[in-house]
Image (cartoon, rainbow, N blue to C red; front, side, top):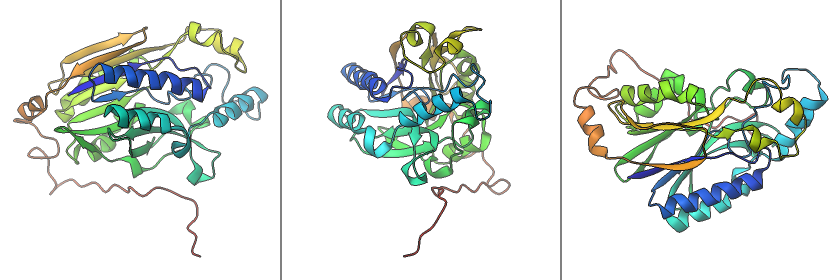
Length: 311
């Protein structure tokens, strides 16, 4: 099975323009014979890079309020803004894993969640996984997710699971996917080989699965032409450190695609499920090398909500 890793720069805080780039990448990946295409974390409408560069923790600060208001306005409502992605998936018979800042109507519509949306090759929404715990400054703009999206999807001999960014460091989140037979682990990131280079082979080796990491790009040349609140402060100081880092490792932990840094592109890898079966001869984390008599895990996959109405 051929998988495409779409390493793109978003049009930061512009949902529709970024979705247009996503649509083009889906078309290109399909033309190259990919069965699935993967995009970075919160690519639409962009990762909140301003938080660590413009004093994001300042309380009642006009700049932070303006940036957040723009972010919320440009957030993605799954049922309203992804029809173009779904149509292309169905047209081409290609699955899509897309990172979004989700504007959640089921939570009243004014909180954003870092979500990984899986669109199946027939165009249906397979799952929406909201990040379990935003990392550090991300908690200033994203809500805390739930276990509803800790599911896997089966396609052409593979069992596909997805986690956002530092969720991939959470052992029990990985176990939740491994226990469902995961053979292709997808990790999506804002962008940076500092995140992907060390962890991706470990994810593959631990799970005896293929592991794919996909990140975005945030370069001065991408941001300079945009009209953004606080753009001067955003570009000042230390260099931006979001260089993509998309990569793939086989179930033995060896590179299929080493981290790709600093360039946009759609990179493809070919995956053979027989390699998973071979590596699981000596280790299967949820099978013959597990100890359910000693260890157990309960996963609550209910979608969280504030109120239950009884009419």
